[in-house]
Image (spheres, rainbow, N blue to C red):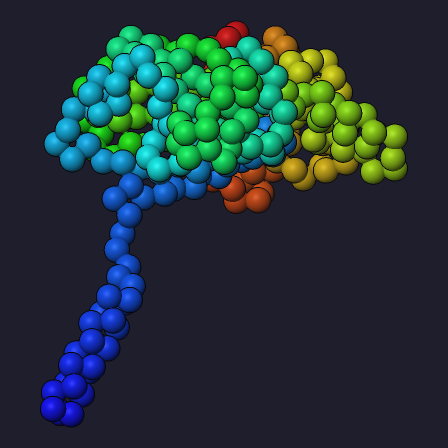
Length: 281
């Protein structure tokens, strides 16, 4: 009798150990975090990525005309480390939940303050920061896993692209960096170490002030007479200003310095520029 009791107890302990064991398995919808440098800061995106799994997604799994958490599990989240503009509205730094209302031809995009919402649970329209509509584009290829990524990235603009099944949408995001850079340059110009090279790039590429760009690149080349890349940059500014003869002479200087430095890339770029200048004449 005692022996039977001991066996029963051992079996019970074994059952308890099995029942309490933790089994690690991959999530059906994996989480991804994407950090994109943008403007004077960055944008961080965190979302869960469901798969199609032989289902019909839009109009079925994700119904048309209904609020969607834009992924699986909790609501997708965007965190801005620099002020941006989305949907015609200025968005402060901070974190926001990304909701969407898909339709066949367009999607309604919603940024909401409810970053701790459990998907659509807890959503309040009163916490919306911005709502706007973007087109839904039909793609030729099929995307199995729901994907969000940053595309068309420029200094002051980018797109958040959403792709799944045979649909793609683009959410335009912009920011203003010119005022901040201009303020930095103007402050630095009051010091003994003046940033002529950086100023030339700013005025040429961002501010489109060719006169100030040429003034600053000239100062930069005077301070760095062996800087072949600066001379090529100056030649491009002169070309843009219509100063073809001056651009040719500056490019010749850059070419000679590039050969001296044995920099094949700049040798090639100067030769190509000089061909363009000859055609312009």
